[in-house]
Length: 251
Image (tube, rainbow, N blue to C red; front, side):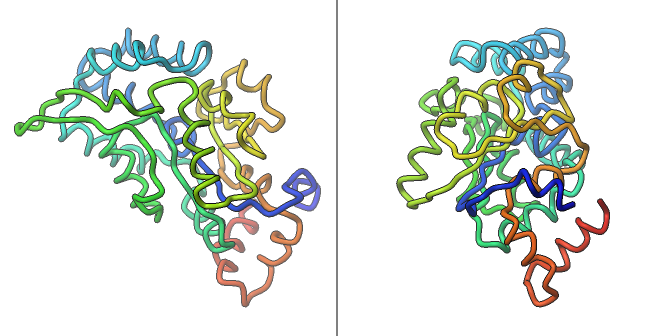
């Protein structure tokens, strides 16, 4: 354990931003919805282009949703699937980060209401969820998406995290993600961890200082803590002791 922690942070983080699809959950949400609507072949292809090669664009984002056209009921199915297929040890890792006083965000080009409902299951407030809203008619049928959201473009995550850093006076922030639209924010965060267990992406791995392929989010946690924070978690009086003990005992 001490050897792993040697590569952790030297300065405590103020905030940690997590991508959702392919990071917190093994599901790519738009691909899951595409499978429900018999659109998997083309949507899966477009998603792989976005995540592994070129990143997101408004045109690509619109193309996938125009094919899928998810309903409100399907978004609820997706929220449940996100949670059922969440990354191992995720709940405890989030509790530890929050217990150490770090703001935990989910920043995702995925869609509301599914991402926010998933976040609530994880104990992440909806005020700390930044994603793309969908619009539905009175029958619950898809109408459109928020075309003004920065997250439908390659630079969106960096723009939003920079704004939140200034708004909340965060000194040190980290991003954990699996795709090229995450990597595009490398220059605006202090620490970036690529997560490749669910989807290995060679170009992402090549650009990351830290690329984790372990099945458990615990491996990411070790890169987000300082040595002092790790030591503090061993104290039975620490509010996160039980959650941390469960993680450390398992690994």
